[in-house]
Image 1 (cartoon, rainbow, N blue to C red):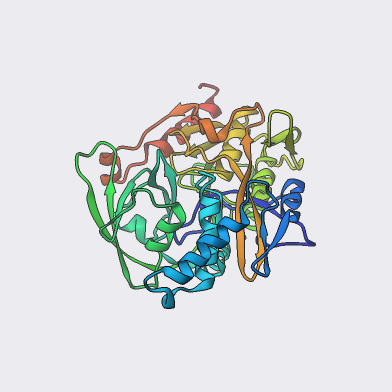
Image 2 (image 1 turned 30 degrees about the horizontal axis):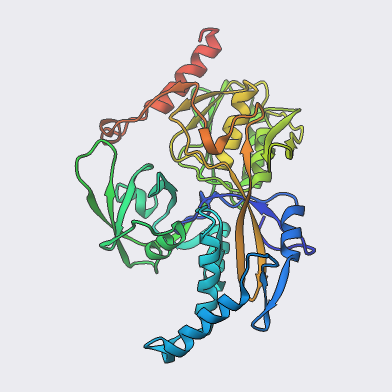
Length: 418
């Protein structure tokens, strides 16, 4: 998940999920935030502006009633019981947030300067929080992925956990961004999450101490049995370089097999996902961007293919989202890897980030991602070729049947069996 910023008056596309003090956002689903080429559609939208209150707002719409807006504004300023305490800037930003929230899309959001700065910090991979990515699933604030060795994971938070309350306040009806703001906070402070976990009868409170979250997104291990393991925690600023270093090492050592672990990976930069999948697939589309039935854009392989002859297993779970789903989907469609684990999160919408000036920005959904064979990531997620679940008993006994299934597959591949 290359920093998201305006460049030569164009707008960089990204996708992801909201970040809890993790990234992305994502995760973040965020998410997570994913960049690629400039968007003509968004550039056109940005040109549609009208003068209002001495500033410019995205409008030029026949349904936009400037008089009604002014009437509501004036009524608040003149009649509100605590009108002297009203902040014009907060009122205006609040009106923009409401406008954008009315789209009904949890990933289309207006960010004021403070929120935009937090978002940029997430992408940089260093921030203060609990180290977990959240999203909205079935209208419930849900943990997409807790980061390894971070406060949320250490407290026992798992992917798929539903957050019913934050510090005793119900999350019913709140946005992902609002949940993020409530959960974030300075290091060494605490936040209480009321969690419902599938299969359990009651909710449970988890008190988590926030910390400084510093993420190195790629970890590589060479096992004694000749199998390499690459764990990708997110597609962040450092991912492309670290992954390239790992591939150089792997290509030179010619391993017996490779495990690509994308579990609890909330996503990141699109370009990195395309380049990563291209290490297995030399030609063809890695992902399809669908704006409408008539308009689609294919992101083609960059043609590297250094890993194409290495038997590969990819691990995914319910915390695998966005860019991680793009990679898993491409390798699955081209039959370059066996996908093992549990169905992915299903975050396949495309957002563009528009710099509105003054530190604020607009993140807006403009398209959906499809796998090379046309499967909708957003609607279907990625289903594993071999479903393997991890039970509460496995976690308590520190067992990883998904990882073991990947090792078994590679061993059988070597011996010529399936």
